[in-house]
Amino acid sequence: MSVSLSALLKTSTASAHQQAESSSFVGELLEGRLDASAVAALTAQLYVVYRELEAVAKAHYSADPLLGGFLDPALDRTAALEADMAYHFGRNWHSRLDEGNIVVVPEAHAYAAAIRERHSSEMLLANHYVRYLGDLSGGQIIHRLVQRHYGIPDEGLNFYLFPGLDNLKRYKDAYRARLDDLVLAEGTEESLLQHASEAFELNRRVFEGLGNGPWTRS
Image (tube, rainbow, N blue to C red; front, side, top):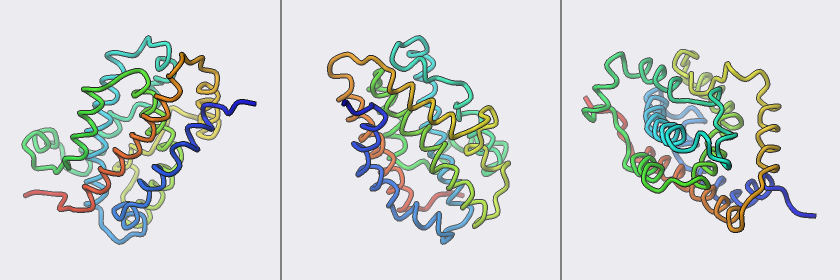
């Protein structure tokens, strides 16, 4: 009996996933040993990555037979992240970001550049899986912990909220079922698995960059 694609994605990325989650920045953030500026810094990195991911997906893959069925507007995070950026950095955050006064680590720029310059159906689907299923799973734990430790209201944590989804578990189950129903061309499965592991590695590098600080400039 063949192993489902969703199961293969989970098992083949387990090591890369663990390495990303084990970064010192993530550990300190979730243990309450940092402060609200760390949450703001993470928000800025996420904005740079998701802005690129969603722009490329919409521009090139909305009708793609592999990726198109996964591009649900209820998952989109760019608008939520823009609201969070305004909360953390003020209404002039766009100009502050453009002027380099909001720190974006080189690793986040590299992640965004990889999506922009090397995108393919397999790469985008792998990153979509890693990012959005992660947001619907571990992201919910991050939301609870950073709110508890740093007292940030939901107005500054829109990224973790999915008001368009009624039941996160049911949605995740349906997402995995959709993956398992894909009919893949030869070599596509292997490419997906490789890109998914690479997505976790790109995330790990962003966390590593954040661990080096500082996160703000006057």
